[in-house]
Image 1 (cartoon, rainbow, N blue to C red):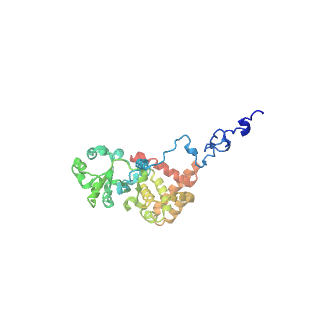
Image 2 (cartoon, rainbow, N blue to C red):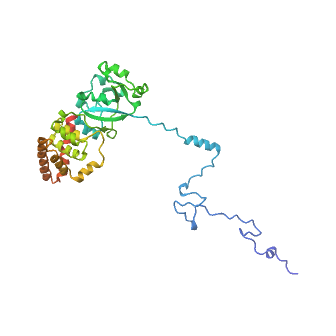
Image 3 (cartoon, rainbow, N blue to C red):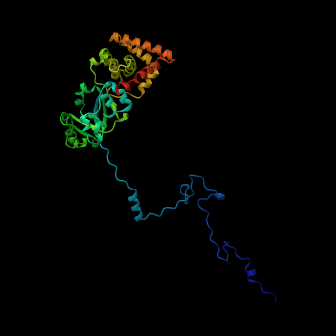
Length: 353
């Protein structure tokens, strides 16, 4: 008899790993790493493979499955306190000299201490103020416009309004200023406390211990009389509200005509023409530039010659002088009008501060 065939010969070739046949236990086929694309490349950024980690998760441990316990704790950590409703701000009214309005438009309202060069050093009233209000570090206004108007002769007709947070101010009746300054400040309370009691007193004045930024301020039409406007009075009445484009053009010429005398009727009229109770639209100055302010102001003078003949004759001389100056500087006449106005206004800080 021949040799007995070996088991391997009968069974055929031994099943290899992963072949699925008998023999060794086949190895489990492992899937490719889910974040790998074909040929080992990573998928395009922003397009993660389904079921795999996205490109924004590489190197990070996957978060645990949420359970009721962790979910509640996570909700507690992430929850924020409810947002408080905004406090209703209160509009107050401030008076100053009309010639200060151009500076306020640029710099906002400074404190009494900042303006000591103009109004004199802080006195006994400011020295008695508490803490951060002491030594003139305050801006003051009134809640009543009617009461503010009663102080024009004392403080000036330049009117400014802004809003305050009632909880961050001190307020008291203006009539108590005549007494002891220390007693006035001791009885001063936040404006919110006065509001809680009901109707506010007519003469209630409000003090804020920080300057008011320009963007929080609205400048209104100066409260001026015909005597203050002089020969401009009729012209201002006719165009200040009805024709804002002409008013702005004439305002530039009036500033030049003042020749740096900021207490003159020319400059007072310029302030009355510059601001009204309602703010001007943003496009107004752009329209004035496009139409050429020199031509606009020439038309205004021609239109109102009969109303104010002496004034218009004087302003025509100023306009001709401005045109000659612009020619010498190589500027267009409209640009020369703007440039001479700016040159006069540059002198204002040294005059009022």
